[in-house]
Image (cartoon, rainbow, N blue to C red; front, side):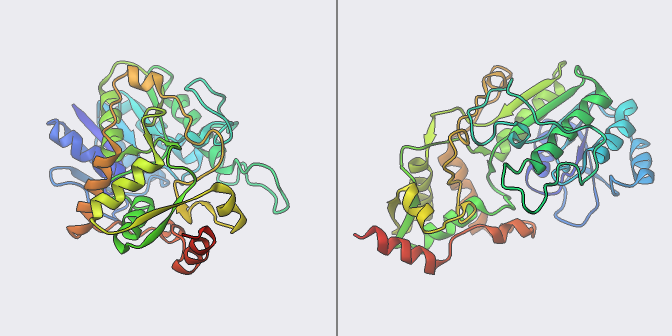
Amino acid sequence: MRILVLGGSWFLGRAVAQDALERGWEVTVFNRGRSGSAPEGARTVHGDRTVAEDLARLAGEGPWDAVVDTSASEMAPRDVLAGARALESVAGRYVYVSTVNAYRGWPTEPLTEDSEILDGPPNADANYGRLPDDWDGPDWYYGRQKAGAERATTTAFGGDRAVILRPGVILGPGEYVGRLPWWLSRAARGGRMIAPGAPDKFIQPIDVRDVAVFALDQAAADRGGAYNVVAPIGRETMGDFLTACVLATGGDAQLAWAPDKLLLDHGVQQWTELPLWRTHAGVWRIESTRAQAAGLVCRPLSETVQDTWAWLRNGGAPVEHPRWAEHGITPEKEAVILAALGR
């Protein structure tokens, strides 16, 4: 099996390339060479996928049985379309990693794999979906961009040769966003620590390695389709997650559960100041029935937590990314909320 990974040097892209190599596949990665490095054994082609000449040069390196696109998170649909069209004649299948943000109902309502996708044309530029400064409704900009990129993929490869993966939150070794690393660092610091919401609140993060396995399985399958790539609903909770963080770090942190209302009253930013905490009804109600039927298997969240802590302790360092700084509440603000909770 010959595979091309668009990205391949950090987090999900690197996990895809590594797993493909372990399967004995021939792996080419294409990136700009500005961050991270591909696993040993992969062939690297450097270039910018927004440059037509670079895409033409890349196509000349083919053919491949499949492309796995992990590097289009901030890319306009028309750029995804141009890249997919450049590779269509030299690749059998195209696996595009999208996001649950592409659904109109996320995060306010429960979702299935047949839920409505946002509008977004396949040839849209980066301005499509931007909202005026005085807009006070839902901000669907990112979701519209990703929905357009999905349509770009199916426009170029057709429904039978295009696979769309819609993960929610991806965690695990190599994470560059900073969600799980922040919680691990906080647990390691010890003392009373805010635990947001309720311990029995379901959550659905998925391990980066499980996403990689599923992406490659679909790359090798003789079918197209769209899948929600998330852990099963109701399997694990926020309490399970935070307890795993405390146990992994071996610290003396004591979880102090803070109700949603208290956190909101103190102006805590959902999703960032206390990562994974969000009060919207649908944020952790995403069905993945079709993906599970197609072979998606999710390891226990405690294993993801333990392996990420081991990676951090053994000198692992994420690729520098601006989103890292967005995550985590300040000790000063946490102290105020803990005081409001009392003993």
